[in-house]
Image 1 (cartoon, rainbow, N blue to C red):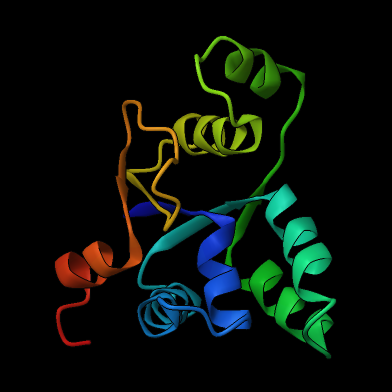
Image 2 (cartoon, rainbow, N blue to C red; image 1 turned 45 degrees about the vertical axis):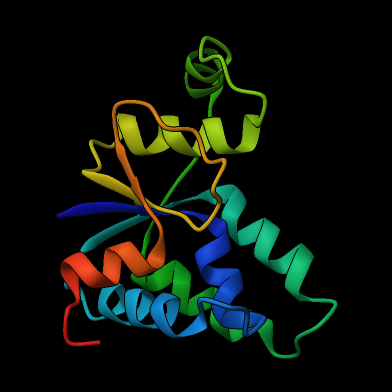
Length: 135
C-alpha cells in the first residue's frame, strides 16, 4: 500500500512529542518496507530547519529517511494543481497533491487541519489502530 507521510510524523519522533510511540512505529514499518512510503522533498528541509535547533546529529536521520522513503518534489505542475484547491495552507496542499499524483492510498498526518480531499487522512493513532494493531 502506498502511503504519504506528513512532516509532523517525523517531527513527533525527533522532538519526542505526544504521538512519538505511534509515529515511531509507523516510520519503523515504512523503513522495513511494509508500506511503500512517500514524503515531500520539503519535508526533509523542514525537518532540518525545525529540528536542527533542538537536535544534534540530524544528518544521519535525514539520510535514513532519504534511503527508506520515496521523496517527491513539487514542480510547476504540482503547484498549479495546488493553487486550484481551496485551502489556506499551501505546504499541506502541495503535500496532498504529491500524494494524489503518486496515487497514494492515504496520508498520515497529526495535523488536524490537514487538507482533506479525495485521499483519506489518518492521524498516527488511527493508522496504528487500523494497520499496526500489535502496537
